[in-house]
Length: 75
Image (tube, rainbow, N blue to C red):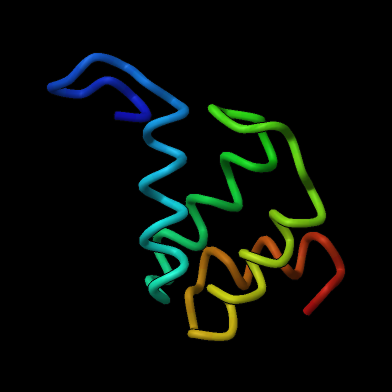
């Protein structure tokens, strides 16, 4: 949904599904939700909330999220 691969592009719907999965504890979804929040893709930009989701993914050992947290000086 977010990129429109196989379906019509709908960033808001994609962000909604990332959030649902992130709330269930899926690290990839937590990372992706952080990205869409950072970029304002389908949601309002919110870098504070994005950092919270990156942190949750990083705590689960997600390497890309850990790298982002290091870049932000939070790990």
